[in-house]
Image (cartoon, rainbow over all chains, first blue to last red):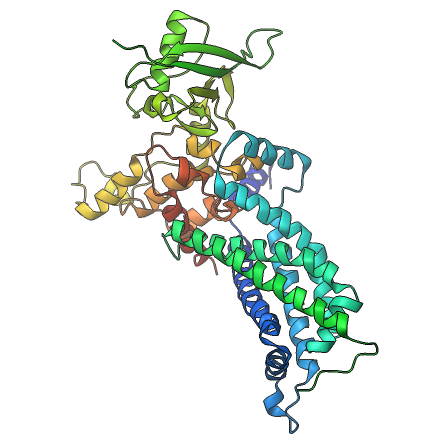
Length: 240
Length: 243
Protein backbone atom coordinates (compact mmCIF):
# COMPACT_ATOMS: atom_id res chain seq x y z
CA UNK A 1 0.00 0.00 0.00
CA UNK A 2 1.55 3.30 -1.06
CA UNK A 3 0.83 6.86 0.02
CA UNK A 4 -1.54 7.45 -2.89
CA UNK A 5 -3.74 4.50 -2.07
CA UNK A 6 -3.78 5.49 1.60
CA UNK A 7 -4.89 8.95 0.61
CA UNK A 8 -7.65 7.67 -1.62
CA UNK A 9 -8.83 5.35 1.16
CA UNK A 10 -8.86 8.25 3.55
CA UNK A 11 -10.90 10.41 1.17
CA UNK A 12 -13.22 7.54 0.48
CA UNK A 13 -14.06 6.95 4.12
CA UNK A 14 -14.19 10.65 4.94
CA UNK A 15 -16.88 11.21 2.35
CA UNK A 16 -19.03 8.24 3.36
CA UNK A 17 -22.20 9.00 5.30
CA UNK A 18 -22.98 6.95 8.36
CA UNK A 19 -26.46 5.48 8.92
CA UNK A 20 -26.12 6.76 12.50
CA UNK A 21 -26.61 10.34 11.31
CA UNK A 22 -30.11 9.47 10.14
CA UNK A 23 -30.76 7.27 13.17
CA UNK A 24 -29.74 10.00 15.62
CA UNK A 25 -32.08 12.47 13.92
CA UNK A 26 -34.97 10.00 13.96
CA UNK A 27 -34.34 8.97 17.57
CA UNK A 28 -34.26 12.61 18.66
CA UNK A 29 -37.60 13.31 17.00
CA UNK A 30 -39.29 10.07 18.15
CA UNK A 31 -38.17 10.40 21.78
CA UNK A 32 -39.05 14.11 21.70
CA UNK A 33 -42.58 13.38 20.46
CA UNK A 34 -42.96 10.62 23.09
CA UNK A 35 -41.90 12.98 25.88
CA UNK A 36 -44.01 15.86 24.52
CA UNK A 37 -47.12 13.68 24.35
CA UNK A 38 -46.36 12.29 27.81
CA UNK A 39 -46.10 15.83 29.17
CA UNK A 40 -49.49 16.76 27.70
CA UNK A 41 -51.06 13.75 29.40
CA UNK A 42 -49.09 14.16 32.64
CA UNK A 43 -50.09 17.80 33.19
CA UNK A 44 -53.74 16.99 32.57
CA UNK A 45 -53.69 14.02 34.94
CA UNK A 46 -52.08 15.95 37.77
CA UNK A 47 -54.35 18.94 37.15
CA UNK A 48 -57.37 16.76 37.92
CA UNK A 49 -56.77 18.01 41.49
CA UNK A 50 -58.52 21.18 40.27
CA UNK A 51 -61.71 19.09 40.07
CA UNK A 52 -61.29 17.98 43.68
CA UNK A 53 -59.37 15.46 45.74
CA UNK A 54 -61.70 12.63 44.75
CA UNK A 55 -61.20 13.22 41.02
CA UNK A 56 -57.43 13.13 41.42
CA UNK A 57 -57.66 10.05 43.64
CA UNK A 58 -59.61 8.15 40.96
CA UNK A 59 -57.24 9.24 38.21
CA UNK A 60 -54.29 7.94 40.23
CA UNK A 61 -56.00 4.63 41.04
CA UNK A 62 -56.89 4.15 37.39
CA UNK A 63 -53.37 4.92 36.15
CA UNK A 64 -51.83 2.68 38.77
CA UNK A 65 -53.91 -0.22 37.47
CA UNK A 66 -56.59 -0.21 40.19
CA UNK A 67 -58.92 -2.29 38.01
CA UNK A 68 -56.56 -5.24 38.40
CA UNK A 69 -56.70 -5.33 42.21
CA UNK A 70 -59.50 -6.76 44.32
CA UNK A 71 -59.65 -3.65 46.55
CA UNK A 72 -59.66 -1.18 43.62
CA UNK A 73 -56.44 0.36 44.88
CA UNK A 74 -53.65 0.84 42.40
CA UNK A 75 -50.05 -0.31 42.61
CA UNK A 76 -47.46 2.47 43.11
CA UNK A 77 -44.91 0.15 41.52
CA UNK A 78 -46.57 0.99 38.18
CA UNK A 79 -45.47 4.61 38.67
CA UNK A 80 -42.00 3.38 39.59
CA UNK A 81 -41.63 1.23 36.46
CA UNK A 82 -43.11 3.93 34.21
CA UNK A 83 -40.76 6.52 35.74
CA UNK A 84 -37.77 4.29 34.97
CA UNK A 85 -39.00 4.04 31.39
CA UNK A 86 -39.43 7.82 31.11
CA UNK A 87 -35.98 8.32 32.62
CA UNK A 88 -34.53 6.05 29.92
CA UNK A 89 -36.34 8.00 27.18
CA UNK A 90 -35.11 11.30 28.65
CA UNK A 91 -31.52 10.02 28.73
CA UNK A 92 -31.69 8.85 25.09
CA UNK A 93 -33.30 12.12 24.02
CA UNK A 94 -30.67 14.17 25.86
CA UNK A 95 -27.83 12.08 24.41
CA UNK A 96 -28.89 12.65 20.79
CA UNK A 97 -30.02 16.25 21.36
CA UNK A 98 -26.53 17.07 22.65
CA UNK A 99 -25.43 17.17 19.00
CA UNK A 100 -27.34 20.45 18.72
CA UNK A 101 -25.72 22.25 21.64
CA UNK A 102 -23.25 25.01 20.85
CA UNK A 103 -20.73 23.27 23.10
CA UNK A 104 -17.80 25.44 22.10
CA UNK A 105 -17.49 29.04 23.18
CA UNK A 106 -17.01 30.15 19.58
CA UNK A 107 -20.31 28.54 18.59
CA UNK A 108 -22.11 30.20 21.49
CA UNK A 109 -20.68 33.58 20.51
CA UNK A 110 -21.69 33.00 16.88
CA UNK A 111 -25.23 32.21 18.03
CA UNK A 112 -25.46 35.32 20.23
CA UNK A 113 -24.00 37.50 17.47
CA UNK A 114 -26.49 36.06 15.01
CA UNK A 115 -29.43 36.66 17.34
CA UNK A 116 -28.26 40.20 17.93
CA UNK A 117 -27.91 40.97 14.22
CA UNK A 118 -30.78 39.05 12.63
CA UNK A 119 -34.44 39.39 13.62
CA UNK A 120 -35.94 35.95 13.27
CA UNK A 121 -38.63 34.53 15.53
CA UNK A 122 -38.03 30.83 14.93
CA UNK A 123 -34.31 31.20 15.64
CA UNK A 124 -35.17 32.96 18.90
CA UNK A 125 -37.67 30.19 19.72
CA UNK A 126 -34.89 27.65 19.18
CA UNK A 127 -32.64 29.63 21.52
CA UNK A 128 -35.25 29.28 24.26
CA UNK A 129 -35.56 25.61 23.47
CA UNK A 130 -31.81 25.36 23.91
CA UNK A 131 -31.84 27.23 27.24
CA UNK A 132 -34.77 25.23 28.62
CA UNK A 133 -33.19 22.00 27.34
CA UNK A 134 -30.06 22.83 29.29
CA UNK A 135 -32.11 23.54 32.43
CA UNK A 136 -33.95 20.23 31.98
CA UNK A 137 -30.65 18.33 32.05
CA UNK A 138 -30.60 19.11 35.76
CA UNK A 139 -34.23 19.48 36.79
CA UNK A 140 -35.97 16.63 34.95
CA UNK A 141 -33.81 13.81 36.43
CA UNK A 142 -34.40 15.14 39.97
CA UNK A 143 -38.17 14.95 39.49
CA UNK A 144 -38.10 11.55 37.77
CA UNK A 145 -35.67 10.11 40.33
CA UNK A 146 -38.01 11.19 43.14
CA UNK A 147 -40.87 9.37 41.40
CA UNK A 148 -38.72 6.24 41.12
CA UNK A 149 -37.72 6.24 44.79
CA UNK A 150 -41.05 7.52 46.20
CA UNK A 151 -43.71 6.58 43.68
CA UNK A 152 -46.66 7.04 46.08
CA UNK A 153 -49.13 9.51 44.57
CA UNK A 154 -52.40 10.77 46.00
CA UNK A 155 -54.13 14.03 46.96
CA UNK A 156 -52.47 14.07 50.38
CA UNK A 157 -49.22 12.30 49.50
CA UNK A 158 -48.56 14.59 46.54
CA UNK A 159 -49.51 17.66 48.56
CA UNK A 160 -47.10 16.55 51.28
CA UNK A 161 -44.34 16.24 48.67
CA UNK A 162 -45.13 19.68 47.22
CA UNK A 163 -45.57 21.60 50.47
CA UNK A 164 -43.71 19.80 53.27
CA UNK A 165 -40.86 18.32 51.19
CA UNK A 166 -40.49 21.65 49.33
CA UNK A 167 -40.89 20.07 45.89
CA UNK A 168 -42.79 23.23 44.83
CA UNK A 169 -39.44 24.92 44.41
CA UNK A 170 -38.43 22.30 41.84
CA UNK A 171 -41.83 22.33 40.13
CA UNK A 172 -42.02 26.11 39.78
CA UNK A 173 -38.76 26.01 37.80
CA UNK A 174 -39.46 22.74 36.00
CA UNK A 175 -42.94 23.69 34.76
CA UNK A 176 -42.04 26.65 32.48
CA UNK A 177 -38.83 24.97 31.31
CA UNK A 178 -40.50 21.71 30.31
CA UNK A 179 -43.63 23.31 28.83
CA UNK A 180 -41.68 25.78 26.64
CA UNK A 181 -39.16 23.12 25.59
CA UNK A 182 -41.78 20.51 24.73
CA UNK A 183 -44.25 22.71 22.85
CA UNK A 184 -41.61 24.44 20.72
CA UNK A 185 -40.10 20.98 20.19
CA UNK A 186 -43.37 19.42 18.98
CA UNK A 187 -43.84 22.36 16.59
CA UNK A 188 -40.31 21.92 15.29
CA UNK A 189 -40.66 18.17 14.74
CA UNK A 190 -43.82 18.76 12.68
CA UNK A 191 -42.15 21.29 10.36
CA UNK A 192 -38.82 19.46 10.34
CA UNK A 193 -40.24 16.29 8.81
CA UNK A 194 -42.83 18.13 6.73
CA UNK A 195 -45.92 16.76 8.50
CA UNK A 196 -47.63 20.07 7.88
CA UNK A 197 -47.09 23.16 5.77
CA UNK A 198 -49.40 25.28 7.92
CA UNK A 199 -46.62 26.73 10.00
CA UNK A 200 -48.47 29.83 11.16
CA UNK A 201 -51.38 27.76 12.45
CA UNK A 202 -49.09 25.34 14.21
CA UNK A 203 -47.15 28.16 15.83
CA UNK A 204 -50.39 29.56 17.21
CA UNK A 205 -51.35 26.14 18.61
CA UNK A 206 -47.93 25.87 20.28
CA UNK A 207 -48.28 29.35 21.84
CA UNK A 208 -51.81 28.64 23.11
CA UNK A 209 -50.68 25.30 24.55
CA UNK A 210 -47.73 26.93 26.34
CA UNK A 211 -50.04 29.41 28.06
CA UNK A 212 -52.73 26.82 28.75
CA UNK A 213 -50.34 24.22 30.22
CA UNK A 214 -48.59 26.84 32.35
CA UNK A 215 -51.95 27.99 33.72
CA UNK A 216 -53.27 24.53 34.61
CA UNK A 217 -49.83 23.54 35.95
CA UNK A 218 -49.57 26.61 38.16
CA UNK A 219 -53.16 26.37 39.38
CA UNK A 220 -52.75 22.73 40.35
CA UNK A 221 -49.45 23.53 42.07
CA UNK A 222 -51.25 26.21 44.10
CA UNK A 223 -53.98 23.66 44.93
CA UNK A 224 -51.39 21.22 46.27
CA UNK A 225 -49.87 24.04 48.33
CA UNK A 226 -53.23 24.80 49.94
CA UNK A 227 -53.94 21.10 50.57
CA UNK A 228 -50.43 20.63 51.97
CA UNK A 229 -50.84 23.59 54.31
CA UNK A 230 -53.90 22.00 55.91
CA UNK A 231 -52.25 18.61 56.41
CA UNK A 232 -50.87 17.52 59.74
CA UNK A 233 -47.79 15.30 59.85
CA UNK A 234 -47.51 12.35 59.62
CA UNK A 235 -49.83 12.42 56.62
CA UNK A 236 -52.58 9.85 56.23
CA UNK A 237 -53.36 8.95 52.60
CA UNK A 238 -56.64 10.33 51.26
CA UNK A 239 -59.58 7.94 51.06
CA UNK A 240 -62.81 9.18 49.51
CA UNK B 1 -43.22 68.85 -6.17
CA UNK B 2 -43.46 68.11 -2.45
CA UNK B 3 -40.29 67.32 -0.59
CA UNK B 4 -39.66 63.73 0.48
CA UNK B 5 -38.86 62.87 4.08
CA UNK B 6 -35.29 62.67 5.23
CA UNK B 7 -33.94 59.14 5.56
CA UNK B 8 -31.14 58.23 7.94
CA UNK B 9 -28.82 55.42 6.94
CA UNK B 10 -26.51 53.74 9.44
CA UNK B 11 -24.01 51.89 7.30
CA UNK B 12 -21.29 49.45 8.35
CA UNK B 13 -17.95 50.68 7.04
CA UNK B 14 -14.74 48.71 7.05
CA UNK B 15 -12.12 48.16 4.40
CA UNK B 16 -9.92 45.15 5.24
CA UNK B 17 -7.52 46.24 2.47
CA UNK B 18 -6.79 49.54 4.17
CA UNK B 19 -4.15 49.22 6.87
CA UNK B 20 -5.32 50.51 10.24
CA UNK B 21 -8.98 50.75 9.25
CA UNK B 22 -11.44 49.67 11.96
CA UNK B 23 -15.08 48.57 11.62
CA UNK B 24 -17.49 51.41 12.35
CA UNK B 25 -21.05 52.54 11.70
CA UNK B 26 -21.35 55.74 9.64
CA UNK B 27 -24.50 57.88 9.46
CA UNK B 28 -25.74 59.35 6.15
CA UNK B 29 -28.84 61.38 5.36
CA UNK B 30 -30.72 61.37 2.10
CA UNK B 31 -34.02 62.76 0.88
CA UNK B 32 -36.48 60.02 -0.01
CA UNK B 33 -37.86 59.86 -3.55
CA UNK B 34 -41.02 58.06 -4.69
CA UNK B 35 -40.42 54.34 -5.28
CA UNK B 36 -36.92 54.55 -3.84
CA UNK B 37 -35.25 51.25 -3.04
CA UNK B 38 -32.31 50.77 -0.67
CA UNK B 39 -30.25 50.01 -3.77
CA UNK B 40 -31.18 53.36 -5.39
CA UNK B 41 -30.43 55.14 -2.11
CA UNK B 42 -26.99 53.49 -1.90
CA UNK B 43 -26.15 54.58 -5.43
CA UNK B 44 -27.20 58.15 -4.64
CA UNK B 45 -25.12 58.13 -1.45
CA UNK B 46 -22.13 56.92 -3.40
CA UNK B 47 -22.62 59.47 -6.18
CA UNK B 48 -23.42 62.46 -3.99
CA UNK B 49 -21.82 61.89 -0.60
CA UNK B 50 -19.17 59.18 -0.41
CA UNK B 51 -17.58 57.63 -3.51
CA UNK B 52 -15.63 55.17 -1.33
CA UNK B 53 -18.80 53.30 -0.23
CA UNK B 54 -18.56 49.66 -1.31
CA UNK B 55 -21.57 47.49 -2.19
CA UNK B 56 -22.40 45.04 -4.98
CA UNK B 57 -25.04 45.17 -7.67
CA UNK B 58 -25.57 44.06 -11.25
CA UNK B 59 -29.17 43.68 -12.34
CA UNK B 60 -31.23 46.06 -10.09
CA UNK B 61 -34.18 43.65 -10.49
CA UNK B 62 -33.76 40.81 -7.98
CA UNK B 63 -32.26 38.47 -10.55
CA UNK B 64 -28.51 38.50 -9.97
CA UNK B 65 -28.56 38.24 -6.16
CA UNK B 66 -25.53 40.54 -5.81
CA UNK B 67 -26.99 43.26 -3.59
CA UNK B 68 -27.94 41.04 -0.63
CA UNK B 69 -27.26 42.66 2.75
CA UNK B 70 -28.78 42.86 6.21
CA UNK B 71 -31.35 45.66 6.23
CA UNK B 72 -32.69 46.50 9.70
CA UNK B 73 -31.94 42.98 10.91
CA UNK B 74 -33.35 41.20 7.87
CA UNK B 75 -31.03 39.68 5.27
CA UNK B 76 -32.52 40.52 1.88
CA UNK B 77 -31.89 42.14 -1.51
CA UNK B 78 -31.37 45.91 -1.47
CA UNK B 79 -32.88 46.29 -4.95
CA UNK B 80 -36.17 44.75 -3.83
CA UNK B 81 -36.49 46.68 -0.58
CA UNK B 82 -38.45 49.93 -0.74
CA UNK B 83 -37.34 52.62 1.71
CA UNK B 84 -41.04 53.39 2.29
CA UNK B 85 -41.19 50.07 4.16
CA UNK B 86 -39.57 51.77 7.15
CA UNK B 87 -41.97 54.29 8.72
CA UNK B 88 -39.31 55.76 11.03
CA UNK B 89 -37.03 56.48 8.08
CA UNK B 90 -34.06 54.88 9.83
CA UNK B 91 -32.26 52.16 7.93
CA UNK B 92 -29.31 50.17 9.26
CA UNK B 93 -27.23 48.31 6.69
CA UNK B 94 -24.80 45.51 7.54
CA UNK B 95 -22.90 43.13 5.26
CA UNK B 96 -24.16 39.53 5.08
CA UNK B 97 -22.60 37.57 7.94
CA UNK B 98 -20.94 34.23 7.20
CA UNK B 99 -19.06 35.36 4.09
CA UNK B 100 -15.62 36.82 3.46
CA UNK B 101 -15.87 40.60 3.68
CA UNK B 102 -14.58 42.47 0.65
CA UNK B 103 -15.35 45.88 2.11
CA UNK B 104 -18.29 47.77 3.69
CA UNK B 105 -21.44 45.99 2.41
CA UNK B 106 -19.69 43.89 -0.19
CA UNK B 107 -19.07 40.19 0.58
CA UNK B 108 -17.61 37.33 -1.43
CA UNK B 109 -20.63 35.06 -1.90
CA UNK B 110 -19.15 33.73 -5.16
CA UNK B 111 -16.25 32.06 -3.37
CA UNK B 112 -18.62 30.27 -0.99
CA UNK B 113 -20.99 29.21 -3.79
CA UNK B 114 -18.16 27.78 -5.84
CA UNK B 115 -16.76 25.85 -2.88
CA UNK B 116 -20.17 24.40 -2.04
CA UNK B 117 -20.79 23.45 -5.69
CA UNK B 118 -17.46 21.62 -5.87
CA UNK B 119 -17.93 19.95 -2.50
CA UNK B 120 -21.47 18.73 -3.21
CA UNK B 121 -20.84 18.16 -6.93
CA UNK B 122 -23.72 20.40 -7.90
CA UNK B 123 -23.89 19.62 -11.58
CA UNK B 124 -25.77 17.07 -13.62
CA UNK B 125 -24.27 13.58 -13.57
CA UNK B 126 -25.90 12.11 -16.68
CA UNK B 127 -26.26 8.38 -17.17
CA UNK B 128 -24.09 6.77 -19.84
CA UNK B 129 -26.76 6.92 -22.54
CA UNK B 130 -27.30 10.65 -22.10
CA UNK B 131 -23.56 11.25 -22.26
CA UNK B 132 -23.58 10.13 -25.87
CA UNK B 133 -24.02 13.34 -27.88
CA UNK B 134 -25.10 11.35 -30.96
CA UNK B 135 -28.26 10.15 -29.24
CA UNK B 136 -31.43 12.17 -28.84
CA UNK B 137 -31.98 13.25 -25.25
CA UNK B 138 -34.92 11.50 -23.57
CA UNK B 139 -37.88 13.89 -23.28
CA UNK B 140 -38.73 15.27 -19.83
CA UNK B 141 -42.33 15.54 -18.64
CA UNK B 142 -43.58 19.14 -18.26
CA UNK B 143 -44.40 18.41 -14.60
CA UNK B 144 -40.85 17.35 -13.86
CA UNK B 145 -39.44 20.31 -15.78
CA UNK B 146 -41.68 22.68 -13.80
CA UNK B 147 -40.44 21.17 -10.52
CA UNK B 148 -36.82 21.62 -11.55
CA UNK B 149 -37.38 25.19 -12.77
CA UNK B 150 -38.96 26.04 -9.43
CA UNK B 151 -35.73 25.07 -7.65
CA UNK B 152 -33.57 26.58 -10.38
CA UNK B 153 -34.87 30.02 -9.41
CA UNK B 154 -32.20 30.27 -6.71
CA UNK B 155 -30.00 33.32 -7.45
CA UNK B 156 -27.26 32.36 -4.97
CA UNK B 157 -27.63 35.63 -3.11
CA UNK B 158 -26.45 34.06 0.17
CA UNK B 159 -29.40 35.31 2.24
CA UNK B 160 -30.28 31.78 3.40
CA UNK B 161 -26.71 31.27 4.62
CA UNK B 162 -26.70 34.53 6.57
CA UNK B 163 -30.16 33.93 8.02
CA UNK B 164 -29.21 30.46 9.29
CA UNK B 165 -27.99 30.33 12.90
CA UNK B 166 -26.95 26.71 12.35
CA UNK B 167 -24.62 27.78 9.56
CA UNK B 168 -23.20 30.59 11.67
CA UNK B 169 -22.41 28.12 14.46
CA UNK B 170 -21.12 25.36 12.19
CA UNK B 171 -19.00 26.68 9.37
CA UNK B 172 -18.98 23.37 7.48
CA UNK B 173 -22.80 23.15 7.30
CA UNK B 174 -23.93 23.21 3.64
CA UNK B 175 -26.83 25.59 4.27
CA UNK B 176 -30.18 25.81 2.51
CA UNK B 177 -28.61 26.74 -0.83
CA UNK B 178 -26.58 23.50 -0.88
CA UNK B 179 -29.57 21.38 0.13
CA UNK B 180 -31.84 23.12 -2.39
CA UNK B 181 -29.44 22.36 -5.21
CA UNK B 182 -29.02 18.76 -4.10
CA UNK B 183 -32.83 18.43 -4.09
CA UNK B 184 -32.86 19.84 -7.63
CA UNK B 185 -30.53 17.11 -8.94
CA UNK B 186 -32.22 14.43 -6.85
CA UNK B 187 -35.49 15.26 -8.62
CA UNK B 188 -33.88 15.29 -12.07
CA UNK B 189 -34.54 11.99 -13.88
CA UNK B 190 -31.46 12.57 -16.06
CA UNK B 191 -29.14 12.47 -13.05
CA UNK B 192 -27.78 8.98 -12.45
CA UNK B 193 -26.90 9.50 -8.77
CA UNK B 194 -28.88 7.25 -6.42
CA UNK B 195 -30.33 8.20 -3.04
CA UNK B 196 -27.36 6.40 -1.50
CA UNK B 197 -24.94 8.57 -3.46
CA UNK B 198 -26.70 11.67 -2.17
CA UNK B 199 -26.66 10.26 1.36
CA UNK B 200 -22.88 10.09 1.24
CA UNK B 201 -22.84 13.80 0.41
CA UNK B 202 -25.54 15.24 2.70
CA UNK B 203 -26.39 12.40 5.12
CA UNK B 204 -24.40 13.86 7.99
CA UNK B 205 -24.19 16.70 10.51
CA UNK B 206 -22.93 19.07 7.84
CA UNK B 207 -25.83 18.13 5.61
CA UNK B 208 -29.52 17.55 6.05
CA UNK B 209 -29.21 16.00 9.53
CA UNK B 210 -27.34 19.05 10.75
CA UNK B 211 -30.28 21.30 9.86
CA UNK B 212 -32.09 22.28 13.07
CA UNK B 213 -35.15 23.67 11.22
CA UNK B 214 -34.73 27.22 12.46
CA UNK B 215 -36.14 28.23 9.04
CA UNK B 216 -34.28 31.52 8.65
CA UNK B 217 -33.79 30.36 5.04
CA UNK B 218 -37.51 29.90 4.45
CA UNK B 219 -38.49 33.20 6.05
CA UNK B 220 -35.88 35.39 4.36
CA UNK B 221 -35.35 33.91 0.88
CA UNK B 222 -36.01 36.83 -1.53
CA UNK B 223 -37.10 34.37 -4.21
CA UNK B 224 -39.60 32.63 -1.87
CA UNK B 225 -38.09 29.23 -2.57
CA UNK B 226 -39.71 26.31 -0.72
CA UNK B 227 -36.74 25.60 1.56
CA UNK B 228 -38.82 24.10 4.35
CA UNK B 229 -40.54 21.59 2.06
CA UNK B 230 -37.35 20.68 0.21
CA UNK B 231 -35.27 20.12 3.34
CA UNK B 232 -38.11 18.06 4.89
CA UNK B 233 -38.31 16.05 1.66
CA UNK B 234 -34.56 15.38 1.69
CA UNK B 235 -34.66 14.53 5.39
CA UNK B 236 -37.44 11.98 4.87
CA UNK B 237 -35.72 10.56 1.81
CA UNK B 238 -32.30 10.31 3.47
CA UNK B 239 -33.80 8.90 6.69
CA UNK B 240 -34.86 5.74 4.86
CA UNK B 241 -31.86 5.47 2.55
CA UNK B 242 -29.32 3.68 4.72
CA UNK B 243 -31.15 1.53 7.24
